[in-house]
Image (cartoon, rainbow, N blue to C red; front, top):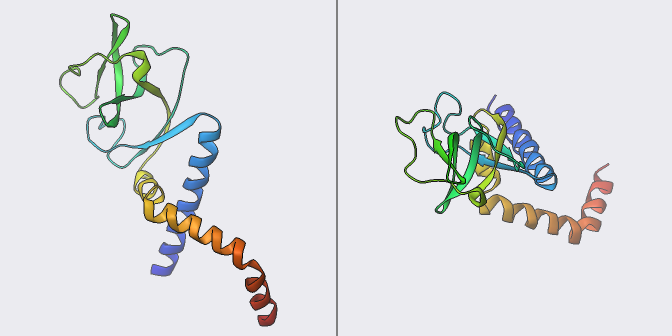
Length: 152
């Protein structure tokens, strides 16, 4: 049973990696929800998928860059050329005005709890391992083919 779960995890990780790579080619971005500020709509460890838009309206959920970490909150008003935002689970609006240049995109989809796998896939160890494995396949492909041929 444990082996089956492990295999399913790797398949899911591969699918998410493909989704992230393919999505980035078409202008989509992925992020992991890290806090409970959007609880009820998006929970901690959910993966959100965003895409840039020409226009953002009140009630759109957007991802924006505020400091070092992207934030995902809902637009509750437009004011002075910017956006007033608020997390759905927060009692008050954010204390800052989000400028249009800070907006990374509008949330267009989410995948519950896929953020756990996404964080793992985006970790430096996994990315390094992927390139190491790809490099070994390229440089050792003849040896692998010979071993496989001898076996069968």
